[in-house]
Image 1 (cartoon, rainbow, N blue to C red):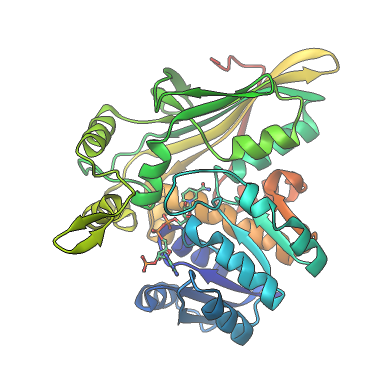
Image 2: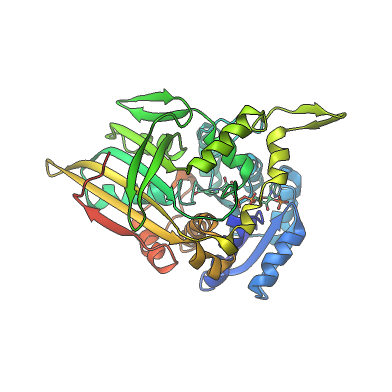
Amino acid sequence: MGKVLIIGAGGVATVAAVKVAQNADVFSDIMIASRTKSKCDAIAKAIGKPNIKTAHVDADKVDELVKLISDFKPDLVMNLALPYQDLTIMDACLKTGVSYLDTANYEPRDEAHFEYSWQWAYKKRFEDAGLTAILGCGFDPGVSGVYTAYAAKHYFDEIQYLDIVDCNAGNHHKAFATNFNPEINIREITQKGRYYENGKWVQTGALEVHKPLTYPNIGPRESYLMYHEELESLTKHYPTIKRARFWMTFGQEYLTHLRVIQDIGMARIDPIDYEGHKIVPLQFLKAVLPNPQDLGANYEGETSIGCRIRGLKDGKEHTYYVYNNCSHQAAYKETGMQGVSYTTGVPACIGARMFMLGLWKRPGVWNVEEFDPDPFMEELNKQGLPWHEVFDGDLEL
Ligand code: NDP
């Protein structure tokens, strides 16, 4: 049994809190702390269990975090705020001697730049302190890495081609909305595309490369090649990979809105002067866009995220496709949140469970694929994200 501190009170944190509360066999006490305490209180009230406390914290401030962590004394901090807070929370964990888990790699505010170097640089300090840091434990990154580790452990001697495919075939009935934090989401999607081939990174224009891919129970959907952070860790940890790519589906309506947002300068992340105030256009846009947390009630359809893998086993080429489909309505009924928050919050809870049980507990800073995938895969089936396998099918890629 252990104590967990959840930082953040958005869609992902809400789902994780609901699931952590359901896993009462391993989590004894829960604290939800975020910038807006009333949101933490609302989550605690909705769950309605006596072992959940709430607090205010500004996670950009190491001193505030240290005070909170020292008072509550958790075994693990789950960082479900924003990627900007990764390093301050890791610093506070080191100062207080507590382990750490997150779902997205650190990004500096002034540059949409995605790489693990900042967080990997903490490895020795976590090792020396005897603390565990689990990085990127959502769905992608997260389950995508666990799926790859599972394939490598059970089905391949050599993984050679990896395509992570992420389809959201849901409809929230809004003209334009993002499924998770709009600022983080638009920064990610408007960056240049990038994939790994024969030891090098190949750059493409933003969403320039696309093709229809067929998703189970959904059908064909136009899928766009993007850079995604787990490509960096997976190509490092599986050096036999010759090519690794990430694909995500977008509808035409979404892309048209995105183009207009960019064309009129609303995707800018540099501060501009407006009537004597400094404002960041993308942050202002976030304030007027629908809140991803409010999309759930009218969200229909499902997500389908998986790994399509080609490689060698006993000298013969094989393909393997492992995926989960998640219904937005089922996610909403269980947690009050839509499927994208659900597919991120559930793996975060499972990662925390793995840590508490000592199955994923090792001093240092680790990506999920560096741990044993088997107990995590077993929990995915039990905790709402069952997976399916297709052997030697046509990967279309
Ligand atoms: P939201 O914007 O809904 O929630 C973020 C929360 O963090 C909000 O409650 C916000 O507070 C809080 N927060 C922001 N800044 C601070 C701060 N300085 N101090 C304390 N709290 C702060 O985002 P999501 O729930 O959609 O996403 C959460 C994380 O999950 C993000 O890092 C995102 O990148 C990641 N993610 C990962 C995925 C994966 O598959 N790996 C997929 C989807 C998301 P307030 O309520 O006051 O705004």
